[in-house]
Image (tube, rainbow, N blue to C red; front, top):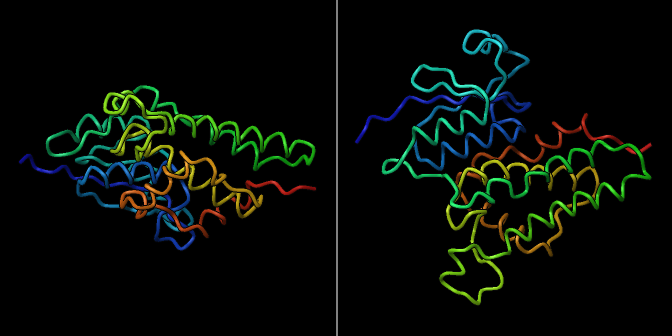
Length: 238
């Protein structure tokens, strides 16, 4: 067996200065490393107390970042690509999706959410909520439609039974999307009394399977941390 690399993941801490802060990009990288099954050190950086850590280790960089065998890796997309290229089978599972559509499924949901929660105009509230719902519905349809390999096994299948975007195995797009859906549900429920509708069966099934996944469950920030993080972003209606 090839020697394991030395990997350190640096993320912003929560308000308590210890646990993972409310950042979907941090959770994304933590999920990848945990699902890969490699040994890594998680360093939570309290920016109010120890900002010099960044200056010493990765000058000019933003959290999160990774140190891989003493080499600093920045930019989340590039880190994801690097990890997938270097943590490969048979020692580590591949997380590259089979279908290119899985890479873009739900890619506009978080943007619609951000516009919705920052709105201060009551006249726009309904339209922006509907815009978010349309994005969620589009994602739900992708999750419900059977993928080619499912239809190959059951040509009469109408609704997919897969666990994740690309099949029954977690892939990189899931690590990008699931933390964002988690934030959307918590923030919208708390500040807008709205949540992802349960009758979107594809998304509901998707989130249910995610909650049973160690790589997701153990990397989620506390709901209270997410609510606190977004308190200054969410615009109150006049």
